[in-house]
Image (cartoon, rainbow, N blue to C red; front, top):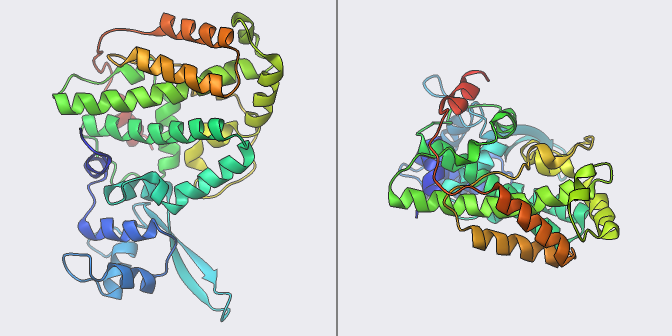
Length: 326
């Protein structure tokens, strides 16, 4: 299996010094001196403070982590002496790039802040866990797609806009468009797509039936309307925080509600363990309190939508054109 660190490095092509700086910014925002103290013994050439600042701000010969949108700098007034200092924070792109050195997203403060925000607002451990897995699997799908086709995003800026266009503008067959490749790569892709399939299916069907204005819920037998209303109340004000999570990692702001269904369309996945994904989807829905008859209706729809062979990429230019048009 290809690990997350290999996928991330393949997409962002980070230098060793950049990896180390991002690794420590994953812990919390820091000033240049704090970064220097943490990184000085962990790079091929021991970094002095000016070296850290050069990697952050760039030089005449190369752009820095700030210019490449991995890091952002903010002027902060210190509470103790009331002086201004520059503090360096991860961006959304920087958070993902940290995975070259950080094993799990849960080790990154930025991801944890997002999770705390969603958990507090949702106030439902099972639903929150599904949302968390959905966000993690979207990051993995994003990485595996670009890695599979050798697309380098190192110099891409405004990654929030790119994520939005990437996930919302691709056609419905996007998730099946992976070429056949070696066994290791195939197994990695298969596992990532299976995990994404489970979380996206759960959220899609919950959203499909939770909105009382959506006539689609009439298709499903055994729907508990009281439970559906309760779930609707939990997700209706939070849909965009889930659908466009990449826009809310760096700062949270008031947004209007929009149905998640456009991005959570139940995708067709090929050559995955359909029984496993069906059973896990079923288990999550039952834990959330849904009636077994309703769950069986969901599984029936999933069965109608599945396909059985590995597809080929019909339009590799999708990703490349999105980057060019930024």
